[in-house]
Every structure is written in C-alpha cells, then in structure tokens.
Image (cartoon, rainbow, N blue to C red; front, side, top):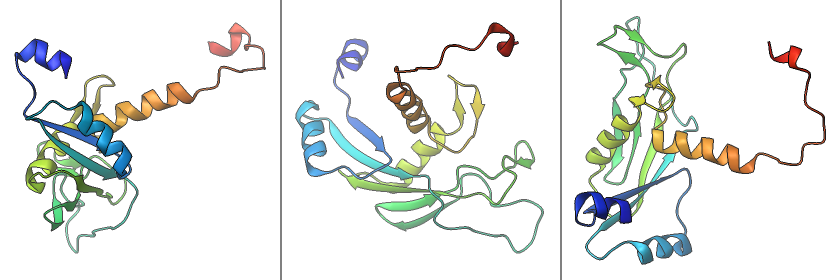
Length: 165
C-alpha cells in the first residue's frame, strides 16, 4: 500500500487478495485493519483441484481457454487452459480442468473478477510460462512457500561435482 501510494500519489481504490482457502474472520479482520479508508477490499478464493469436466461432443479440440460457467454472482468455473484460436492448438494434452473462483469476502462483479484472473494466467514473466492455467498470484505464492518450508537441517553431505554435469 505504501509503495502504491508513493508511486501513484493516492491509495488504491480496490485491493484483491487471492487465496487457495477461504478467509476466516480473524484473517479478514486483520486485512481490513491495514487497508486505508476508502479502499475496497475483496477476498477471492481460487481452487485449482479438479471439480468438473466438460467434454465436447464434436471437434478435434477441447473447450476454449477463457470459457466460464458462472454459477451465481459470487462464484464460477473458469477454463484457464484449453484451445487457443490464435495459435490454433490446445495447451494441454488432456481434457482441461477449470479452476473454481469464489468471491468469499467483500463485493465485486464476478465477470470482472474472471477477466482479471484470466489475465493473470496469460504470461508469467518471472518464469516465462505462457498460459499454464494458474494465476501468477498463486504460482508466485506457491514458490515462496516452497522456499520458506525447505529444510535447512540437511544431514547428507553434498554430492560430488560429477553428479551435476
């Protein structure tokens, strides 16, 4: 928030927090406590575990990347991998699974949330990954989590240099 204020000269109008789990009351209260007055806060849960499959009756390619099934004004399934017309191929070798998106705290328009998440799956500049289906917000958090949980208590000696070439 401080960096945004320094660069833009004002507080953000909206902030979206992406998570793989639903926010509990204590977590949400802590977020609200640090958000400046006038900034709308929205909590989004993104579940990447397969929940539904959609098969095409005809055609060589699976569902198109970017299709969504909106359940209600707060939740939807979004296919972030699948057939891409611009490159005339599908980016997966199997039937694509959608991700489940839910606005679980705050208020926002589900269509805009889907468009934003879709944009965040397009290109991960840090890893040079095109359309891998996971928003960079979650992908980056997963990588940081791997680093933070890596054990520093390694008892085995390092392998000889010959194993690395």
